[in-house]
Amino acid sequence: MPTTTSQVVFLEGGAVAIEDIAIPDPAPNQILVRSTRSLISAGTELNILELSATERRDPGYALVGQVAEVGLEVEGYAVGDRVLTCLPHQGAGLITIDPDLDDVPAYAGHVPDDVSDDDASFVVLGDVALHGVRRARPGLGDSVAVFGQGGLGQMVTQFARMAGAYPVVAVDLLDERLDLARWSGATHTVNAQREDAVAAVQDLTGGGARVVFMVTRTPKILPDCLRAAAAGGTISMTGSPPGTVEIGLQVELLRKELSIIGTYQSMYPREPYHMFQWTRAANRQYILDAMGRGEFRVDRLISHREPYTNAADLYAKIRRGPEGWLSIILQWDQA
Image (cartoon, rainbow, N blue to C red):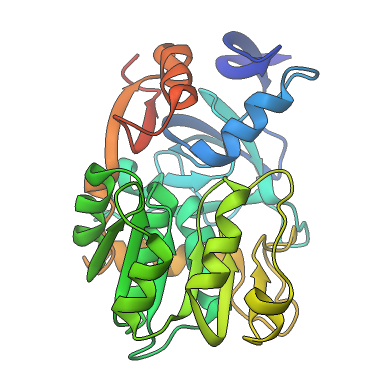
């Protein structure tokens, strides 16, 4: 019999709604988590909002909460523990704790005492940024350009700088995001509305960036990323652009011997793959630890922190365009 009633944010018919759901008692290998914060992943969730025109979707994959109940067979968790999960935007949910189960919803990472719920809500998306930087492998003194300075782009910028890249050039259309990119570690900024971004990156990097990150859901940016790269450079597609784009093969790609990397991660978070040893869980633990040490910060990336009951208005804000917001957190314990 269901024992817990929760609320869930869902998308259907291109609209945002909230409904009650029933959560059953935890099975012996499950924990029940009551939510405190969840982070809207704007790029991915805009894609999902569009897909919801034909099919109901439950968005969200970065939720922080407290353990409320623990199954009889579960070890390593206690009531009151704060955990980071991949649950969608909902007030409570069950997590299966099974060492043999490689499934994304099975993740429940302990949040250190010195990391806030707000900050911890960024860690799953931060894992995407970190994975993109690890795959592209910028090193000490490598020039980097990051096209797109939303929340994900800001974290890519910060990780690239932490890796020793220099210069790190942030490219965006909004001065407010470029100003924040300086705080995130960018050494130079380029407003693509006021100047030729490709020419500016080439000038700042002495002919082109060794690594270019495309962190935007706008496919048409890819040709500019190719042109902004140095000969032999790498383009890492770390955003989630839908659709297609046409690129020039000869001048833009072949003659410069560029490498284009797609970064999406495996659906299996616990096992290393394609000779890449940093799993999702390992990346997330690194980020939590770096937050605790004060080496990785996201507090200034939060533009809105509001009750989940305001979800429809917040999604409408995202839908209107990038002005006036950056990263949006839904509060579940203060509605």
